[in-house]
Length: 245
Image (cartoon, rainbow, N blue to C red; front, top):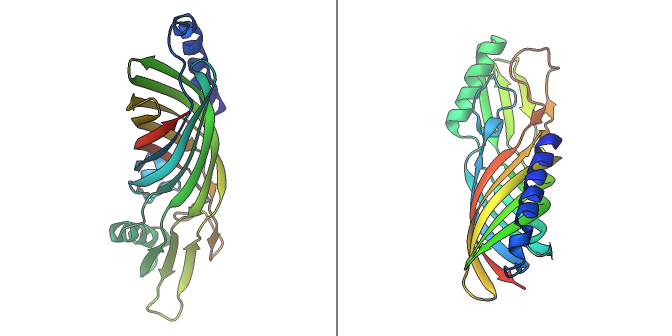
């Protein structure tokens, strides 16, 4: 994970060095603060729906809304900062049935029922080096970033075995409000509407090892699905408007 972040940073620094001379003749980029909104798509394990994969998150494509800023320190090299909110949906009826069938087969019970409530919601705070290329009214922003993902909510998943008998057994995957380190990168294009305003599109990649997941019920014996960590990976596509200063 640290290696990938180092590579992203090295690429940006290299691009800055190669382009430094050319930028002497180019107007310096202005710092900016913008409002962004768009779609956040779960990737890798976060979006998988495989019962046998204990890292599968069953997350769905959702929305993201945030603030994005670029503070230039030397010519077109600076620091980029993003603070955003994401909603990655909830488990569907098909997901619950998928899990119920898996638990039924794993534990060899006569009956299993799965109920899932709450949504995936989190906050991201990411920052890192940014370099911008200017061409006429267009600006290409490249950024490597690292920061934190704060889970606001995850689905609560309740499993009931043999509920029709008098010997029901319960297994619950609890709601998590954990925090995890994350890293990623982004590329965006802004178009200058005026000396003070830009509008632009941005693609952002964020990855983490994941938040801790707690469970309650019978002690785990190595049988069936048992999730203790949820990796979070998001690919975000946003449209934004920014004020330059």
